[in-house]
View 1: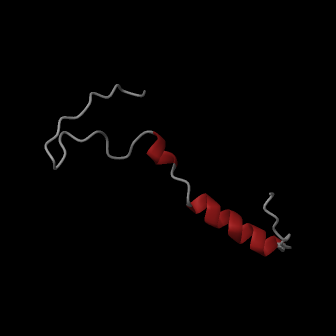
View 2: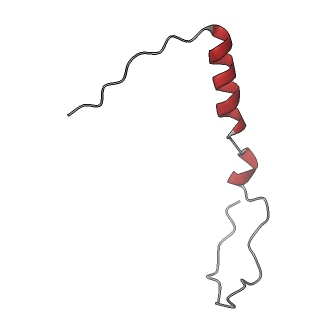
Length: 54
């Protein structure tokens, strides 16, 4: 059974505000890693080696 939703009419300001909100959710820095790989974790469990993505 298909989900049916009612269309919503948005004016230009509402579309602009919605797009601004969606862009605020993006984090392009996260693609390369902001903090890097930790040396250790609180549990002291060993970390798997990770290759450099660059």
